[in-house]
View (tube, rainbow, N blue to C red):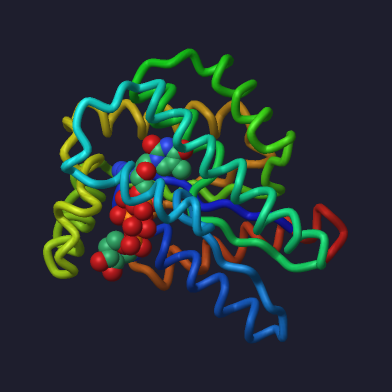
Length: 215
Ligand code: Z5A
């Protein structure tokens, strides 16, 4: 199974992914945990360019093609081999990030983006996407505090510096994507305490497993 985690900045994707990974490990499974951008050697280089607040004047299309290069390499080098080996793959961000950020956020045509993403991934889409939804001010507040504590305000801060309007467009974009694909995208109330968010993710995962006949 291929599961992606999506949501605005600070939604709690990384924490929720860890809860699901721990749950699967307790069942004796060995999920592959990975992320975009940055799931490969190439991707880590691209990530440092894409997220650094000192990266100036990146055009929306240049930004898009860097994310797509990261994904194409990630799919070929990490995700497909793991799926072929029978592993469950848990991925922090994937195609829906491109549709929400570069599409709904930056204004690139979403249908054109879908085609570009399919080309980069050779058509690979997640079986389940967990969309962690919460108000923008709540997510930005959490992420800001974490970045200050970890000293990553500059090195990972380029998207944090976008306007509240941009982040609202991204959140709204995600909600539209979830309405369009309710079978794939499960919306999780990420404003709740982490234990509750984790339970919602485990429950959606179990339902998907049963739907796919693997429960
Ligand atoms: N991007 C793009 O534009 N196009 C693309 O195609 C792709 C990405 C793939 C990647 O950043 C940036 O690239 C992203 C979109 C863009 N930028 N933005 N915005 P990233 O994925 O590395 O970073 P992020 O999305 O900003 O994630 P994050 O800041 O790491 O947030 P998170 O993973 O969702 O949250 P977290 O680290 O799990 O939690 C954040 C803090 O909140 C932390 O201190 C936790 O302890 C706390 N937390 C978590 N859950 C809770 C709950 N439930 N209650 C209270 N506190 C909580």
